Image 1 (cartoon, rainbow, N blue to C red):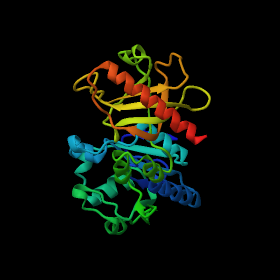
Image 2 (cartoon, rainbow, N blue to C red):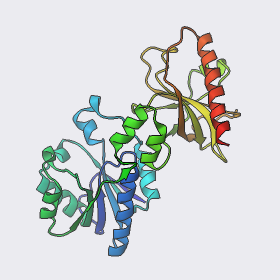
Image 3 (tube, one colour):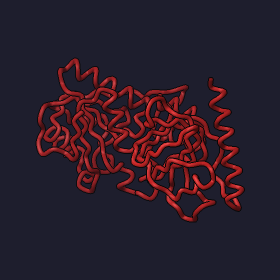
Image 4 (cartoon, rainbow, N blue to C red):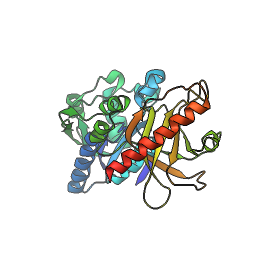
Length: 306
């Protein structure tokens, strides 16, 4: 898959295009990508995606922006897996945000991306102040055709990034997985930590997070990327209130029956079941007892799956 960082100065090969942040690449997004690839094949055009970084809501109000469901790298991997040939990552800044709807169509879609066919959601908005809508896009589309994608519902609920975040925040991993079409995951590289887990008898793989996660707590997880089949474990995701005050979020994973040096290894942690919320304990002895109980509960969870 070809990845273009920033809008090109001029279009190359004409494309079939869909537009969006695609945070999570949930089942609604997946339906759009399936339709994109299908139409692109019919039109003999490469299927392409226009996405944005940072997320527009991060640009306008970073402090109150929703947590990301996927890192940029993980999102690109998902898009490639769904058959996309080309992704343009436009930097969302004041210049892009200030384009009037007709300027966005002419300068971005036509001149810089060379679109011949565009797929958007029924509620698509674009241009300065989100003034452009589906009707405006169709009216401006003199050199390309426009198709609208209907909302995808899962068990009567609209598949959306907001719905996934709401489910994760509530600890409802089953509902989040249904909306995503897969379990929620976080990927990252294992880094050196304080080695506290090892001193307590539970060595952990520490995965620093660049962005605030959409969930916190203690979970039964599977870890991919350690060679061979995925391995079961228990993960703590949060700010470790017993250990340090004001610490940034960290993902710590104790992998069952595993003792290898994996610093620098990129792993993917699959969240399957929430065991409890994060809590502060009076001392390390109390924390150790709770970790021991968490490990036992997680092992029971995996034993029940067999």
